[in-house]
Image (cartoon, rainbow, N blue to C red; front, top):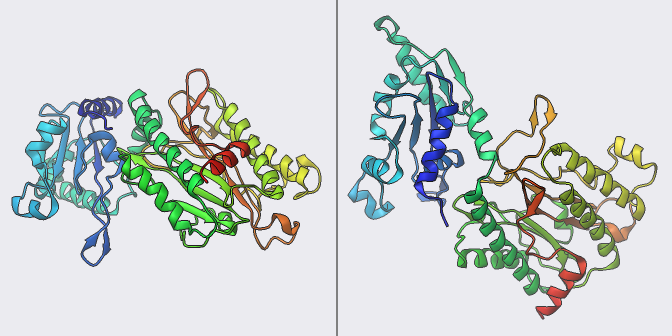
Length: 439
């Protein structure tokens, strides 16, 4: 499942229309990363670059120049090299970039330092993600130095360097129907994978075996890569928010927390479910789980256009603190507990994040210092959690080492919201029924 090339061209055109008059914009591709010695990690394209090109080769550079008569979009890319292609696979080359990817012009990378000073010359503003790509920063400095040495020959440096993020990331924040379709497919595959992990979980298995179930189902269904390193934490490991060792044995009386989601055409899914290794919640687990679930359901129900982002988080704090107070893990006045952040040892992260081509996707959370209102086309995660550290001696022993998080991907619609990941069970009854059916 992929977007067509016309989609990428429309995005470039939209961005060009927003750029300041007389500007030039630069968007770099990712580079290959060494895993060990001469072996490399599987290549994953830079999200900004892929969003505008659909071009999945390393070490390229997209240049956008509004109003340029010879063409507004230029791609610098690796050359065709039949001898190297025996080892590395087919490359599009400049001809393929124009024919297959719809840019106006394309050149080989070897011409970058030769041509870029001339392309920048006379432009009033240079727009790129300054500070995000050290190699591009160094190249830009060299190009500007070349322009400075030519000032007496009539060369003109840009008067401003502007962050391209201001326009590009705002575009990425809002998903259109084609993007939502891909994200829904990724979410559905991940939901199926989580359900399989629940069904196949048994005491004595290892965390990495559940990880393998998730990865195999997604890959066999067309999603080769996960959007991030899966978290599979059994018992107290669930209290480590970004635990990825995934090498411990699963014990019968423990919960296991799985945070995993696949990626399709560079679009992420992100699901967390927590369930009992044995297939049955103990009473303390059941009580704490219900607090988290009730908070998550209420937060999802509150999502609709116009609601400030921060309001959803504040609601989660109130509901989780109420639950901790009711169960006796906190004592005192509710308002005072919230004001003093007494919940922080149990709930130390925010309610969620934007979701898109990056699992923690781009887009501002505040506008002019205020939490921005939710709007149709945004996709966010809703993931409240409670984590009782195994060494927390302030609570009864029955609670210690319990970590619970429940996470879904939610699209903001014109009239409310749509949960993209609702195919995987999360009520206590549904989880236990699914796990028993897997026997």
